Image (cartoon, rainbow, N blue to C red; front, top):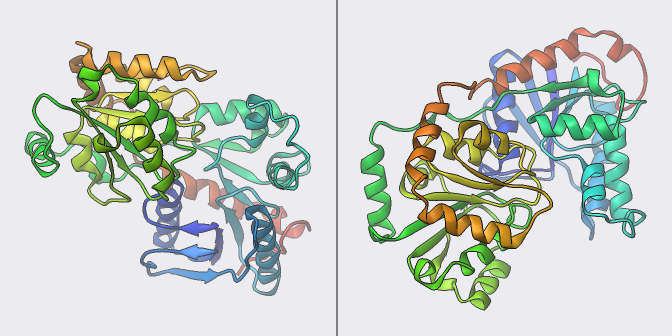
Length: 388
């Protein structure tokens, strides 16, 4: 039996992409074939997974996404599958994995009244309506309580189709036995002195992850603290704009843009604080990974997994509406606070209190429930989905 997985682009370092791969591999292990339709693919292709690159392009992102949906729709009518699982909002999905926050909530929060009628915003609003609106039967896999709150508020009546997933951490994100040695290795490798603070930000997509906010917070530290602070940025994106901002702020020598990396556990042990002031984030695995490794976290309440920081007592969460001065003050306070030891202890203890690994298993349960609902394939609408 074949499942179609729809994702615009795959690369190994994004949170959405890592969840996509976890679920795909779990479906393959359960005996399904997974056929992926994507615009770009970076990395190895596992056994049991077929990758089809969608040959469309456009000058604007929303037009390209529209052409992607049309091309995939036609391809699935020619070569049907048992179910269509989307990792972005679009028409014709049997299941949607909510890697993105609620678009309607974002428009309301950012008060973009004058941009709502632009083609780009109409496209994303239509696609969200196609998944969550009253005419939809798409089952939705959510990552956080905030998503449930936002989607149910803006699309009343969709609640019965919303299913919450536990996190899906990788086993290598658990604290290693040799944490002290890893910390020493990191400090030696990057020449971080004993009296220096190592601040870490992890995440691909620098704008949404709030990197400009983070750079300004580092620059706003008192001179004596700033001169003892090193800022490590790990993630896949184009850094030039943010390197220019760091130079303008006078902190470029304190900032290290390291790209996407496979040795994230080394950073989790070697650094002193995770700074993650994202504009919006459905989950934010890096928050939970930092917490359970005893790395104090400073984040924003617009991150879906920010509640883990609060529940664990492992750092601080900036409330909305966002204030740069509030973030600046909290960063300074956390770096010099005597609470750092208790934040670390609380985070390490939290790992034994929550389900850290159940995402892919629960996603498979929800996918198979959709497959068992024969009426889904007997009615029209969306892509022509029949068992394959």
